[in-house]
Amino acid sequence: MEDWRDKVRDEEVFCPFCGHADDAQKWWTQIQLSHAREAAVAIIQVTIGDALHRDAQRFNQSQPKGRFISMSLRVDNRPQRVPIPYAAAAPMRLKITCGECGCRYAVVGVAYFCPSCGANAAELVFDLTVQGIRQALKAVDSIRAAIPDADTAENTCRLIVESALQNAVTAFQRNTEALYTRIAPTTKIRRNAFQNLAEGSDLWIAAIGHGYDKHLVTAELEQLTTVFQQRHLLAHTLGVVDDDYIRKTGDTRYKPGQRLVIKQEAVEEALTLVEQLTLGIREDAKGKC
Image 1 (tube, rainbow, N blue to C red):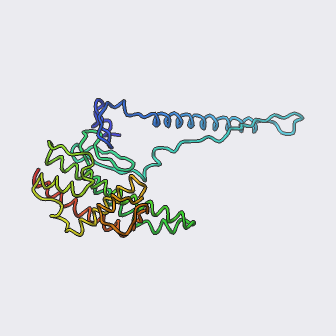
Image 2 (image 1 turned 180 degrees about the vertical axis):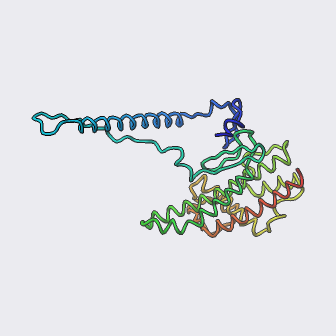
Image 3 (image 1 turned 45 degrees about the vertical axis):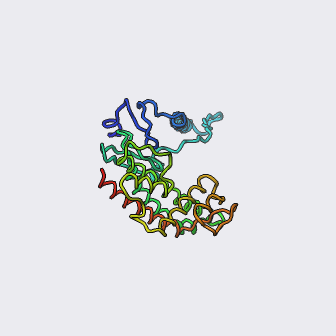
């Protein structure tokens, strides 16, 4: 709250997710306002209900016993739905400190822009995302063991592994976009160009003279190409294989219409390659900035 008060300007606040800028009063969504109203009403209802209970209890205790006529009070209040407080989201929050202005902020999920100065924090978020993915993958066996229904357990673990793959590719894309913009700020590139390894490598060659093959061998690049195409299928076809996937990857394990099977070990290997490539690109960018 100190940084929101002292560092973030009222006239310009940046969205951590997309970088859109607007004044401080434009960031209250209708869902947030509704949540705040519900929370306020729930607190008032509980407060009044507790007060009525106490008054009724005091009244009943003050009544003489053994009389022919007796009186008592009973408060019959229905259970109230209390919205989960914001603090309950603490375990899901990613805490970030901007490297440019020092503003501290937190998001649920991932974000790439400082709300105070708009600086792109993709590099920092990439590092935090990699740590988070590794922690999630390590927890898969424990999660599987904790769910009694075998089908539910396997489905949950599958979703965790597939999400890890998608998050790794997205974090790489955002990080590489930020680095490329730094060294080639006037070059126009198509949206999501760095989701395509071959296209991204060509852009890097044009900008600094060499591509991804400086940091990964051919077999590793082919492995990552397959992973990037699998992310595309998970995001756009629910993981169902099509002719385009087979043509681009040469992955003959599948036929069109089959669904991908993403192995945890494959995601762990891909994450290591993504991190290796990203660290190499960072060093390249440092030499050109």
